Image 1 (tube, rainbow, N blue to C red):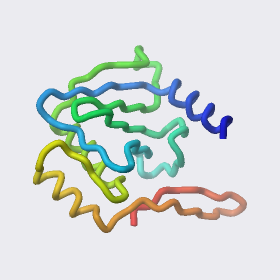
Image 2: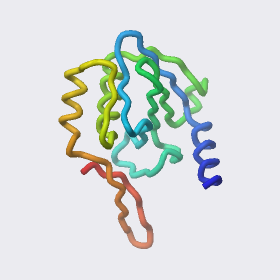
Image 3: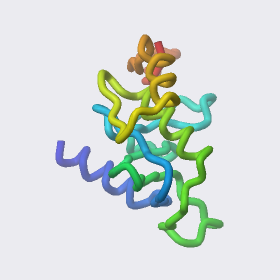
Image 4: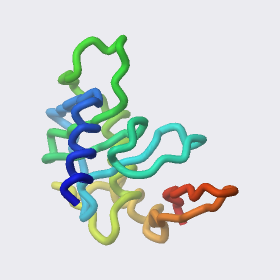
Length: 142
């Protein structure tokens, strides 16, 4: 377990960190406070430590940390960005999809309610696929 935690920490340190802030829109969070996955659905990856995965962690209603693969063209390893409405909306959808039972939002929101209704019968299930001698683990949305 300690070795696994060390590998995850090293992976996070090698990623590009983006701290998103918002002054007028809210970030949702849920009973699954950290979401991770690969934005490129054609690539099957597993776990937050995988180098190509995106990791999202809302800290409060105005602050979110995102970690993604770092590229040399990025320059800085960490940036602070004011999130626009479209970005916040996308993140809130991902949070609702990844929740197990509860979504937390600071006020009544028709958009959040729609996302909850849309994803209430969906969940991420870890599936194992065997390809020849290899076993590939992939999160499926069911």
